[in-house]
Length: 521
Image (cartoon, rainbow, N blue to C red; front, side, top):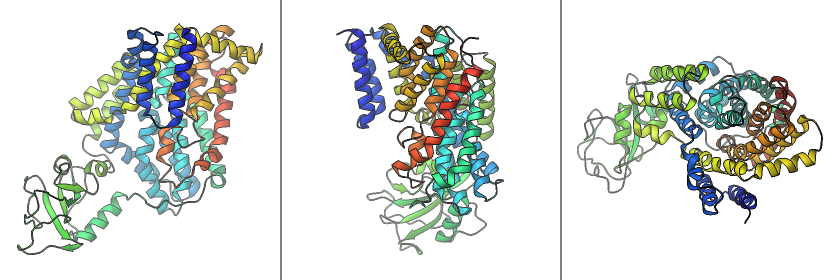
């Protein structure tokens, strides 16, 4: 079979697999690389080169940095400081939440920012008497806009920057994305503030996350813990555990004030059926609950085994503690990484590797935490789809599609071609990963720019803007999916609120971007 036809068949099968949601994204991406090699479209080296690409390495390191900021409470602290000063008015809270998530996203990615701020936003909205559904979708949408404030906001930015350099232009500077990101953040905030009340539903989810104050009060009341006992702090915390069936703890006698058999934790309370256990005649049975206190590291280590079932994982509770252990070191590493990226002293992948290594060496994260923090689905997705972009170029597939696109738009201006590229990206981006979409469309955009004899920079920046405009479905991005349940949303809620923003992003991509990055410098 002709290599062009083979490449298009592989693309079509990948899109179908993405849309089916039955095959993991990483498996689909790996399948693309293997299929390109098996059909002879690419040699083994190019077919697997994506997994060692500097772009993939840089993206992986950003997950480690994000985990450090999240697990040490830096994100929680920033959220509390900003939202705590916003008052209880709907508009002021909405504006502050959108600006906060946009700023956080620029440094730690869309998914990390949204995941870290969802509990905070739900609690603040509930306290202010505002349905969480009025706040959470704007949170996700503002994160998409904030992703365009800096190079580190999303993998898409890194991909288009490298694509521009590979096309003979130049990579985008670290904060250069802000030239388009700032207007998009401002426009997003304006739209959700003015029209959000009518476009967003008023629904209350069935379950709401607790904040630290509420969690502490409930535990103190339920287990009758004296007021002078610190339950949750920077260095120490508590864990509520249930004795598991066949646990080695069954038959032991525990009482408040004693240490656990390991000697690492202190028992604060023991209950059976909600009643405290008193007297030496009472020994532990399966189903009894124990409240234990100790250093966070010991809590995590001693509640991870088969003897107990933990109610709330200590690692999850610890994230809500503002500026916990290691926070200052995490901030220093973040600032150093941003300086390296902004000045261009070293390549982005090296800056990311240095930052990730520094976080482990300074014991902000353990090696196991660093490995677990990486979204391997994203890494495999980008690494597996890069060879498809290579195949588009080497087989002439990108030339073929670009020629067909130019035949459709005729002899119109570059603006028309740019519009066609952006619409194609936005349509695909509602159905499959925007990262995969950009990897597919980028080589086409490069050829279109070359055929028109114009700069590739506006096409690449517009591609980044279009890739961020994934607003119409809950499956368009992980951030959209994250707010679905806590916001009590339905599938149709997304396009109602997302359509005005998608049109804003389209206008900015087609009309504003070429003003900043001209077609003919």
